[in-house]
Amino acid sequence: MKVIKSVDSLQNELKYKVGFVIGFVPTMGYLHQGHISLIEQCVHENDITIVSIFVNPKQFNDSDDLKNYPRNIRKDVALLEKSGVDLVFIPPVKEIYPDSEEEYFSFGHLEEIMEGKYRPGHFNGVAQVVSRLFKIVKPSKAYFGLKDFQQLAIIKKLVQILDMHIDIIPCPIVREKDGLAMSSRNVLLKNEERKSASRISQTLFESRNFAKNHSVEETKNWVVNTVNKDPNLEVEYFEIVDDTELLQIQNWDDKTQSVGCIAVKTGNVRLIDNILF
Ligand code: AMP
Picture 1 (tube, rainbow, N blue to C red):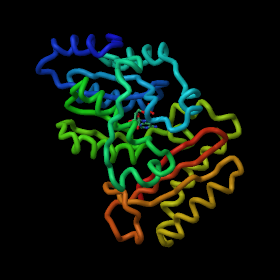
Picture 2: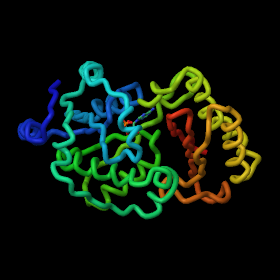
Picture 3: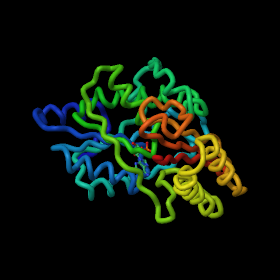
């Protein structure tokens, strides 16, 4: 496995890989089993797997969140080595953003709700880094976790906007034993917060049963109230939307597939999760 830090050396490596099918997994590092599941699928489905580790400053709307974001490159590289990755791209910020120019993307409704509403500028930051990485790596397939459900919808739209022929492959959410969706940020939870955090996924799982004989509105209220009963948790939003346009569902028979997306604050940490209904 090669560890590469500059765009030039990555492109130099890729010169010799003409005709190989390239799979790509972009990450912000501090890798866990959720990341590894994407990587394993990528290794299985492509000739070459490239993983990037880049904590993208442009997608952080909160400077403390960026400062406190967990990092451990040495451990990440050791983990990737064991996972059959061919190239790890770990660029410094200047390699990805050589000048101060901002690019603006327009995602319409997709960026106006949920994460877009509570994290202004976040998706434009995500789009900037992903579009640059896609242009550098030129993958045939790129792997993204369903944990970041709205991000996945944004990325699918991004490749349409840029007319890039890249298959965007959604991968299932990997959870801890108690149901908490794995996340690099989980390490920032204090003991009590970590215990409380399991209530988020448990409530989402139970809401599927609740929804069988309650309306969409009643289900939304029930989820918010049940999570908020724990004094360590504060729901930022819980929305039930269709799985492509992310339009709010009014009745269960509105669309074939709906998804409940939640963001919860516990202490200084913000957690997101979702469930298919
Ligand atoms: P991040 O490093 O948080 O930017 O995540 C990199 C990729 O891993 C994104 O596509 C995430 O959606 C995905 N990912 C993060 N956590 C999980 C998880 N628990 N299960 C599945 N995919 C995940």
